Length: 215
Ligand SMILES: CC(C)(COP(=O)(O)OP(=O)(O)OC[C@H]1O[C@@H](n2cnc3c(N)ncnc32)[C@H](O)[C@@H]1OP(=O)(O)O)[C@@H](O)C(=O)NCCC(=O)NCCS
Image (cartoon, rainbow, N blue to C red):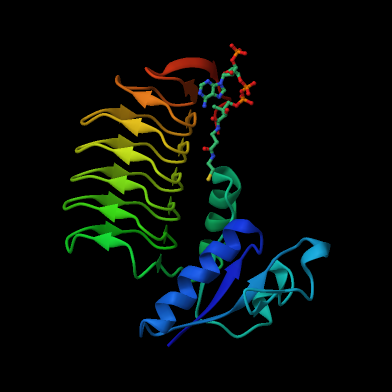
């Protein structure tokens, strides 16, 4: 039985709690214990029936076998993931029972697969990725570590998304397109041409509106 702590008790943390509880209720060997969150306002709260047990430093004091990092910001989530992996933490994949995932799909540690997600054959999902509500990831996609695919996104076949990129809510990436690392695609964008790393692109068709500093 995996005894799981959720790092982050905000909106996304509660989504992850819901996923883990539904996994448990569907018969998976998963016991969500509660949240850790450094915000003072979160302490002693109970959210979706699970308690906030303390801050991140309390990981050392609370018996557990695995964690999920439930922080929406990709760079922060990456930093916390790298630090805790070095400390020897194990990361569980939180996979909603109502996600439809082809049998050969590979999913990295710490990924969160929300309700209504569809992942087609041959796709590879990196570590610490968020595939948010009802996004579709078509065949042979390569999704890098720490990526967030927001709700309602559609990725065509053979798409590649570089590490740390945010694909905004409702965006569409046409088949075979490649998007670099640590970029942001705006809500509703239509990606019809490849995009480099470290850019912000919006619109349909998408255009680059600015560059981001290197991570
Ligand atoms: C792309 C984005 C990051 C830009 O944020 P920003 O840097 O604060 O940009 P601004 O709001 O200052 O807008 C800059 C320009 O881009 C336009 N723009 C911003 N977002 C846009 C979008 N999604 N589609 C089309 N145009 C957009 C603005 O209208 C503005 O145009 P102007 O210069 O002609 O007035 C943000 O608007 C966005 O879409 N984020 C995605 C959020 C999301 O989906 N998160 C996942 C939640 S689960």
